[in-house]
Image (tube, rainbow, N blue to C red; front, side, top):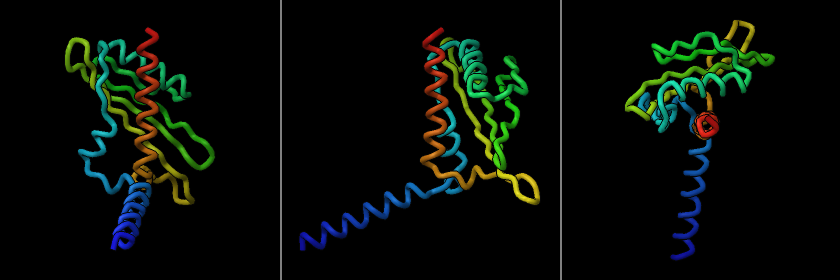
Length: 145
């Protein structure tokens, strides 16, 4: 009986791990995506705004528009063979020294018919890792200032 229970638990855990690693962004609700893409920084709005512009520049994204008043930073597409990427940010000062930031990472793949979005095909764990990486880069940039 114990062996059966142990084997069953192992099988269930394996299935859950496999399902989590293959789940895509399309399976998330809008709210879940926003939660993954959003964080708070304990720093003044302008300082965070400048840090984001610098991080995007460091990662070789060309700034298309940086509007401090609207809290919007957009980049141009970065093309690498048949894949292009861009990252955008929206900012909102929520308190004197707290700034809310939402990043939006876009990926498109080129086919004979043109470019098509692949964000929904992205694995959740990869997307989480990507957003965490950029939030960490912004945090490091803020610590240096």
